[in-house]
Image (cartoon, rainbow, N blue to C red):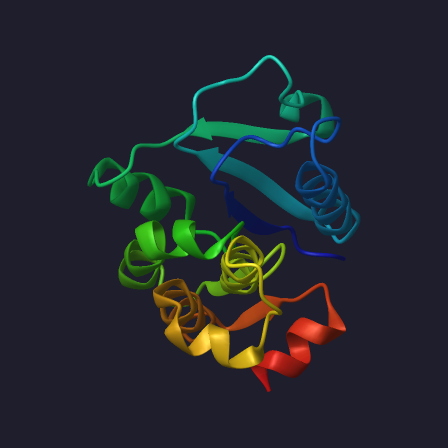
Length: 168
């Protein structure tokens, strides 16, 4: 008999699969975890939007959470998830330490969606009318923060082979 495991997804925003590729990808991840018998709770500090998916229709519990509030500690302790998925590094920065402190046995996953530091460095090079070079990442503060977040997690989901090569 398959034992039900608990997954907590902490999102920067609520999934909007018809508005963004990231929203569609999140719904794919939810589907994969559901197929593998996970009980899923999706938590976010974001306000509801007109375009957000009805999570309850997918069998996912919805929970509003606050940034920098100890009420999250009580929530995550009571939920006691087996796995926690952060939808981007900035969410891991905000909530990862609280998860580690209150649910030390939980597996922590980071969905990079794409490397934000790569996007930032490419945008900067474009605005400066020059070609992006890998060394541009060395001067990006966001790169240091994002890599630190990757290192704090047990597993990171990386979409692009190019991004995997950069991280190696």
